[in-house]
Image (cartoon, rainbow, N blue to C red; front, side):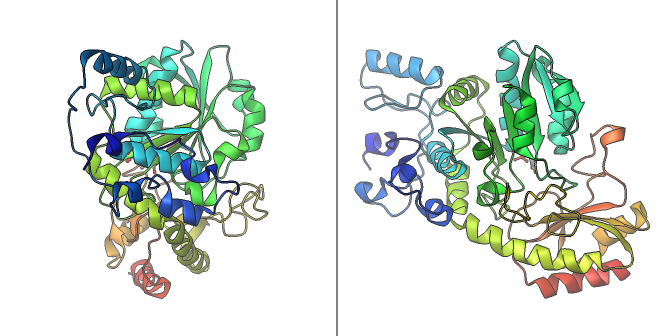
Length: 409
Ligand SMILES: *Cc1c(COP(=O)(O)O)cnc(C)c1O
């Protein structure tokens, strides 16, 4: 394989979508960042494991190093130099996610948390170290903000108190919608109005680019834990932030120093997973709706949190398609008898796996207060009776039977 053509940048981050008419996400997911494969004479992207690349000469090497260290995408005639600076498989995933997210560029990290923490470092380096965190957030994100990683200082807000939480040194607003684990929905356009020009980062892991495009509603950055729906099979970790060229360059420059770039094998696996994400997301969503309907009718279930149920979408963000095109496939439900009843359900399922993570083909159930949201401080900690269920691709009736016996155990 000709090394240069494999590592050369694809035309632009908008490659596939640069056509006159924007193609459907289904089509983009299959083809994005694969436009050069025919020319390379291969059917799928080669996994490029090179740790280093032979330098044509010292001048090209030095100029390439400078550009990559500054966060610029690899240019024609440049050398990738070293894989911590530029990794072809990670670059493909970035390009594909940028296209699907409708953003200019994207940067891929070893995990979702690596993405979040690198963003915090970049924000802290701007001098505006104050961050407004809209709770609830994923437990890891909540924890890293609360402990002040990289010297950031957090003010917790609700979707309606963001404006009053802003300070002259606020560098970022961070929100999740739907939120983990409560499935709360936040009106992004309303949040952008309150933000008053402060950059807004939206964790879009639960919705994915299939159901929601935060960039279209004015978000500056879209954070995705690729470990979840993009990979979709529970066998790869990764995180991606899609954004404009300016923020992407800062993130890439920081990543080059922090050393948390996505590995070739994980990038390959996640890029492959992305191809089936649209149909997986919709099929899982269909099953989740049926399970949510069923759970809502169970006497020992106090409440089901799911945007597809009455009351689950108070601002009509899904119902009228204003922000999301569907409710997704993650739901949470509270057991009437609290903690012990919830734990019993998690221990009694057979088909559903008692495990953290979400978004994959196999259904997973977990207890947020004990696991994913364990480090969250008291007022924001999820209720002890709450369970989070990520609905996979198993038959809905089989899943309901499994829950039925676990709920009555
Ligand atoms: C899992 C998750 C993360 C963290 O991603 P990792 O890949 O596990 O580091 C961040 N945000 C949300 C909403 C998540 O579900």
